[in-house]
Image 1 (cartoon, rainbow, N blue to C red):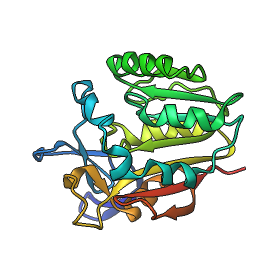
Image 2 (cartoon, helix red, strand yellow):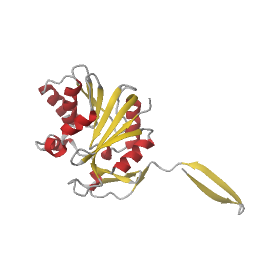
Image 3 (cartoon, rainbow, N blue to C red):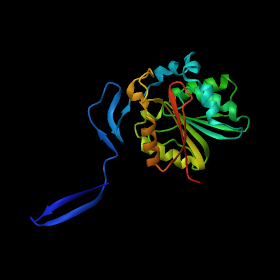
Length: 234
């Protein structure tokens, strides 16, 4: 919010309060960005479904230590989870085992091709508590107050409308529900990921708290990524 003072008839000052700053600022795109900026950072290009094999690469478990991530989430049978930007379901399938038999994982993606791959992989693994769901660029398409925990793994920095998506996700959370951001650490130059595909903890906290979420904790046990956890008000 800002104020602008205008000179009227050479004498009278009129204050225009409550003028709204634009949510997004557009400009020249960098090599890995879309030229659209939100809260001081450029939004990164989305990885298309054609790169799906990278999500299921053999070395991913070792590089990212998904076992440590699952331990940090402290999942329980019966929980309702949402994997936003689920891709091929690499994490969705692992979380589904943790919340079985009565829990559910909604695997949300905006690319129908990803959901085809995800559904096939879940069926091959015999995981019938994974529900693929087509979201949009602005809405996760989940029922209000239906989710215990939602997670975005290396996804949030690519959202074209992060405020809208996060806003819809907050509505989908149950009171006291959690949102987990997993992002490559921008603070660490040794993490072998392009800069626009990293986020600092400070930036994650700034953007999440702008949507009314309360920071709960940050886990730094993963080799390359932050795990930044927020809660919705009770």
